[in-house]
Length: 98
Image (cartoon, rainbow, N blue to C red):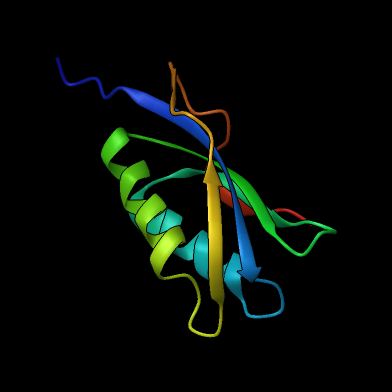
């Protein structure tokens, strides 16, 4: 008892998500939820990333990525991979990658 099932999920967000502090807000929200993972800008103008946490934490972050984002962002769409069960976190926290 007391063990939490962890999951990993990849995401990619499309729209006006670069040069609007989207990665910073994403990292802050992920940390607030207790998620581990990363996000980065792509050369195509999207933001990609991976998140790890409980199913509830991931679902909350998915909602945020689809409907909130940073104040000046415009989210046109988000792709999510399936949630894959994992035994442990692969990163120590949530980071912004260059």
